[in-house]
Amino acid sequence: MENIQAQTIAGGSIQPLAGTATTAGVRAATLETSTQRRKTILSIVAASSGNLVEWFDFYAYSFTALYFASAFFPSGDETTQLLNTAGVFAAGFFMRPVGSWLFGRIADRRGRRASMVTSVLLMCFGSLMVACLPTYASIGIWAPVLLLVARLMQGLSVGGEYGTSATYMSEVAVSGRRGFYASFQYVTLIGGQLLAVLTLVVLQQFLSTPELKAWGWRIPFVIGSIAALVALFLRRSLDETSTREERSRKDAGTIKGILAHPRALLTVLGYTAGGSLVFYTYTTYMQKYLVNTTHLSAATASQVMTGALACFMVLQPVFGTLSDRIGRRNMMICFGICTTLSTVFLMTAIGHTASPWEAFGLIMVALMGASFYTSISGIVKAEMFPAHVRAMAVGLSYAIGNAAFGGTAEYVALWFKSSGNESHFFWYVTALSFVALIASFLMPDSRRHGYLDVDA
Image (cartoon, rainbow, N blue to C red; front, side, top):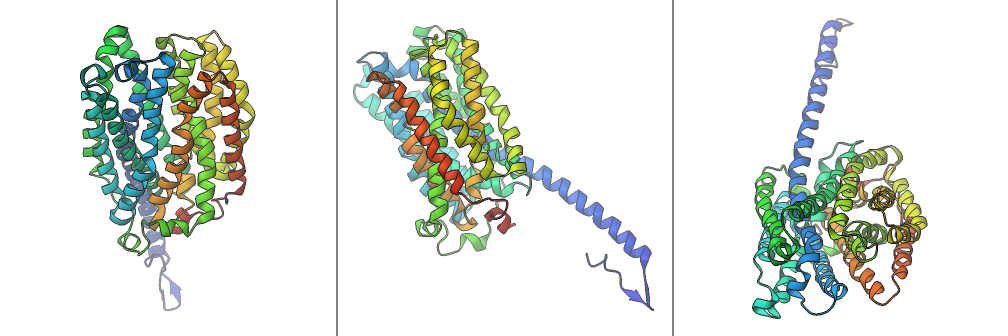
């Protein structure tokens, strides 16, 4: 910039030198932008690899529960067995607040990279433990107890993963394109679900139902633990996005620091409650809903959900880009309106359809509405908190809302079904969607004030 400002000698400007410097400056700026873009993409890929593995491991449990439920909970009918496994699934969610606090503190005080490396390593141990667990027939009551311990370990890991990866991907993204880049958190989150259900579909083609119930359900957990080691290697190369000054602040990574932003905290809790419940209703619970209520076969339900999740994953960057155009607040309002008005109709229609294609179409309508939230789930929170508490604030506020409403979605839905009031669950989802809508109206517009822009 100093060369561009040509000095005046003897009353005249040195125009040729100024022009040359200007051209060189433009070229340098273009090169820097192009280099930065490549660096951003590589960082997103490295961070996403761990996110993908984390969620593959976590959802492998949900999708294989149909086969191992009787191995750990042998008594009762199919709904009771699924209810027990859903209870263990929900317990993993209740470890998320602890994980988000622990790993958020590490991220805000020691760095984002250190937190992400540790969380994926913990997930590796949890998955390997599930893969090796003996059944109820071998060790009795200790089988479900150890299953619960493994799930708590995974819940702790995922609790730390969300806040830190959402923060990192938001911070490393280029201004004006943050919605697009940050949407890849849910691309990999959904991708983890998709790979889990694809693995199950492949196993269903080569193994019989008795083989899947006997030992085949363990294979996804072995795959997940190996993939975690690959993600661990990739994450070690990540650049740090927080500064030493931010990490050394007295209130960095503390609850006190988060409570200094009460409006942001309550807003995130409000729309996370509805967003998480809707997401888990139409993804993890939907496979069981198609089997238990729509009465599709387990294999057909898996195929329907594979196609739906693949389309859902592709939608995330599209909706993320849309958020860069219309703003995060408007996206959240669209989400609240769509899900509040459509949930009862869509869930009822899915439950009464006899066609897998019709079920797929209805699920996709629901997932398009959910995409207004999922595509910006991380960045809409990151923009509301300053850097020195961002990782913990994003993770903890999300984990609390997610544990209370997202993680319990399957359990609540199956409880309503077992009591003969399945339709009450649809209204429950509708009510929480309305809460998310109210929170969306109350949130600030990040285009006028967002902490990521302040940091930049």
